[in-house]
Length: 406
Ligand SMILES: Cc1ncc(COP(=O)(O)O)c(C=O)c1O
Image 1 (cartoon, rainbow, N blue to C red):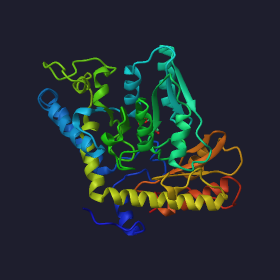
Image 2 (image 1 turned 180 degrees about the vertical axis):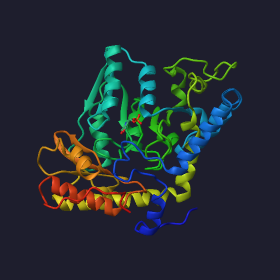
Image 3 (image 1 turned 120 degrees about the vertical axis):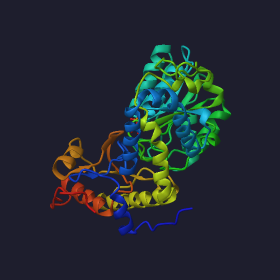
Image 4 (image 1 turned 135 degrees about the horizontal axis):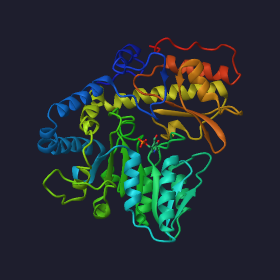
């Protein structure tokens, strides 16, 4: 058990922020797109590369499998499943492609998605459906999220006799919403429709118990909120679906000379590559666990809530769901005032050194603020002031920072 740290203990959090070596000209409020890896995790990755480079034959042939199993076991425990149900992949995109390539679809079948899904995920399923003369169906979710049951009902309304799979984010990319995946999985598995969860924002941002969810597939990136190295992700496959899954890259599967016997062994050896991101995942888990997962969630949510409140006050707008009802975690997603804001994200970076996504979703503009442990209320204040200025609501322009605000 780690001690609880006050969310507003600025001294503690400011010291901790030194673990991230973020370029001093940047206010980085976009961990949701590309996570910044803390220095102790980056160091550990470098150590793995060094060990590999010093004796590749011994590392790959005699040791790698054991190292990978250790790392896989730690990750499996962290996300609530067991080693044999989970493989390392480079990222959530890779995992989703594995599912799309192996899922049995016939002409006329339907794959159900919704309008909050990640753009690349739509593209993956459109291509797969086209190949099989199947159909990727996109349900439009309500403009305002009122209840968990309302969401389930909207998704169920898209089900037909032809629906073979539901693809759903755990936390949505364009809107930062935590989906009620427990209720969704229950409702769809009751109807014998398997669920594939796209979860790159979930590990660490929310507690995970994949086995309990009962989904068929779960894919995520560890390089986002969990702070793993770039290029670390995983794919979970329910035991009922494992026999039809193959990696897209065919190689030895297991290390020479043993042949693969189980589905997960097929993923071990996919040609000679750098395994250091996977091997460093236990270090990332350990890093955040030492701070305390509850402290991480508490602080990052407290900051996101601060950002939401300040932005809503500044623009007199209301988010599409209520934070107090559990719809949001470490990201704030706030509507911008009426206007044409195509250039805003670029201006924030070029003029003020602020890295934050300005998103056009269903023809309205939003700002999505990601809050990790290196962020501060001062950075959020700078963002709010800068947005007010650039949208014509204030005249003062905040100066571009010489270094990350403390
Ligand atoms: C919901 C969602 N799915 C998938 C992805 C793709 O993740 P990656 O680029 O790590 O594969 C992202 C990336 O931001 C995302 O937000």
